Image 1 (cartoon, rainbow, N blue to C red):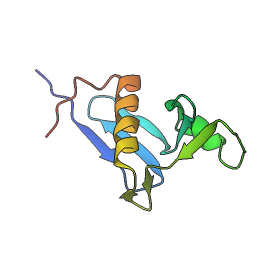
Image 2 (cartoon, helix red, strand yellow):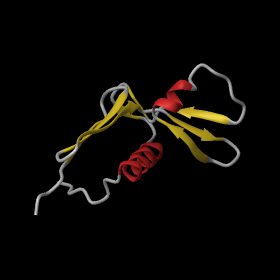
Image 3 (tube, rainbow, N blue to C red):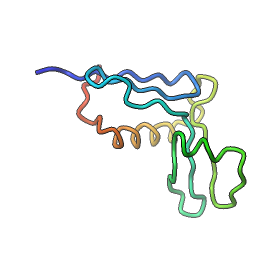
Image 4 (cartoon, helix red, strand yellow):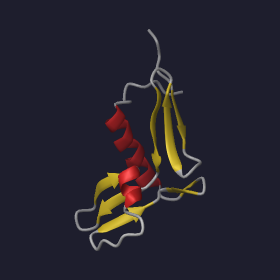
Length: 95
């Protein structure tokens, strides 16, 4: 059985996830957009990054990782969980 190993780079402004059997599977900014009233995630990565500088009353932008430091642990956990669901990495082997 061939194992799939995953590497995650959290240090830069972009979140990069590498899978040993698929290569780079995610390479986008670590930005999230939340609906304020519903308290739910509406966008992440490139789309959320495109919202920076625009004013929305109902959307709050979050950078859970800034300057190589996890500044919001819950948001970082949600970011990784959402990305893993999106790229279907739940069967990855963790060391």
